Amino acid sequence: MDKNSALSELKKEIEADKKLPLYGAANLVFGEGNSNTDVLFIGEAPGYHEDQQMRPFVGQAGKLLDKLLLAIAWPRGNIYITNIVKRRPPANRDPLPEEIEAYKPYLKRQIEIINPKVIATLGRFSLNYFLPLAKISRDHGVAQYYGEYILMPLYHPAAALRAGAVLKELESDFKKLPEILKNPPERKTLPKLETKKEDIQNKLF
Image (cartoon, rainbow, N blue to C red; front, side):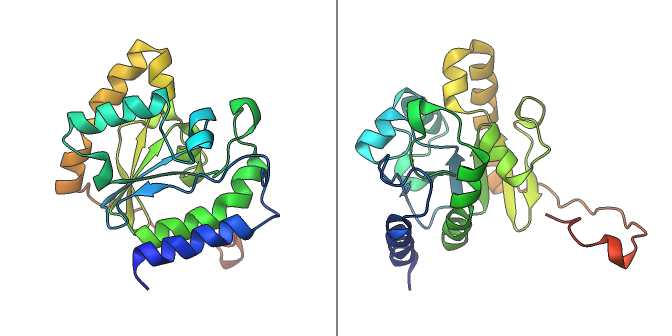
């Protein structure tokens, strides 16, 4: 099965899963773009405009994202964009932990199907999905490996619309993306620790 067919089947599974939070309260915003991309952008959840159009990042934050992509000569159609939670939380509130957890298996499979080289996280929720202890204000713009993927933490475009300083940081971080793709960061070797066998369980994420 090719990637587009696999993504289509995954979308059907999500649509049929009535146990998912926000089912029936909002439209499914699955994601869109080039399934063969090297770069996957992941946000937190759809907003009002995304819910209406059933497409990710189409409101003001989406327009800024498009502008940032054009600045590095990456047409939006060349990358793939999705969110952790695939339906809009009421009143655009932050996604709840149980909502993130419920949609987690579907995002995991979506990532595995697309199999990008770089995952660009947009905002703290997306970053903390992969690195629970990371802080967006401290760790943005610093690429590192997460398993086989290069993880690039970025501010959410919505945050950049509210603060000029954040916008400058986001623009600067975006400019690093083409270079990261051409010259991936080195894999750091973690120091070996003396660990008792019974202590290993639940230590890894």
